[in-house]
Amino acid sequence: MMGFVSFAGLAEMIRENVHRVPGDVDLIVGIPRSGMIPAYMIGLYLNRVVVDLEGFLVDQPIGHGSTRPAVAVPPSPMQARSILLVDDSALMGGSIRSAVKRLRDAGYTGRITECAAIVVPEATDKVDLYFSIMPLPRLFEWNAFHHVLVEGACFDMDGILCADPTEEENDDGERYRAFLGCARPHVRPTRRIAHIVSARLERYRPETEAWLAANGIEYGTLHLVNLPTAEERRRQGAHVVHKARVYMETGAPLFYESEPEQARQIARLSHKPVLCTHDMTLHLPDRLDVVAMARTMRWHMKTPLSLMKKRVKRLLIGHPAR
Image 1: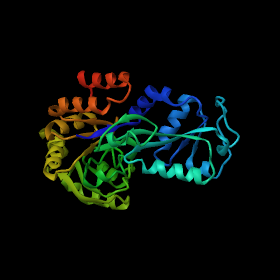
Image 2: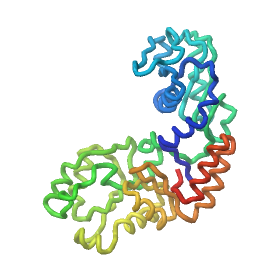
Image 3: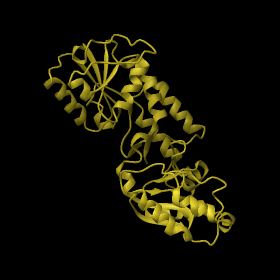
Image 4: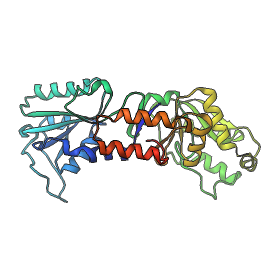
């Protein structure tokens, strides 16, 4: 089982829990880079100014927009009486402890409330405040293309690594060949992808390999469909079958798929999780639904009851797990 948190899921956690932030906090300090995401969300909900840790340490002047006046803006970071130090997650609390030490070494004497949006069960006592408990393995939308999982995963190509062809371009002829050479890059993972699994035809391998090389995308194996034409591929419905087969044979821990219906079908056929990048939803195979529900309930037993009820309700009515 794998846990997944999208930007929307993180916003929901914060929205449901932001009342637990101490009322005397007059500055939000985010730990770059991932910690800035929940820090800004919390700051917007509480109407508090947000600064990054490095800016705080040099006592950089505080600025904010003019759309709405921020509440209780201290003259400078070091003059804040109480700060909320925020990271996106905590395993052993090392990053937050290191940040606290840097703040104290820089001379800050005010109150520090340590906050991690998501913690593992073993880290609930490592911070002062958290919004959700989620054990490993887990994946966040903001690190989905940079996580170590990428190095063992299967990736769809069109719609993820590059833009999908238009209807005019997708003619299985000269227009399609032109598209293959100049397709617009979409996402560039920062790790080497284990398997690129595309429904492109085998005869387009040279153009596909050339495009990947030109765009600096590192990968292990490129799996294409060995059929003569796109019409034959459609007739056989080979898109999903090909992807699910490779996913099962490679033993990959996760499949990244851009098309929602294909994502659902790959999860069903492979009995393994599939991350749909179109709406950032983690699809779990049907046979794991009961396990997913039980683990979700256990993960969130220390979060407010209202949030746990919402998540269990999603599972009960058949929504994809997040």
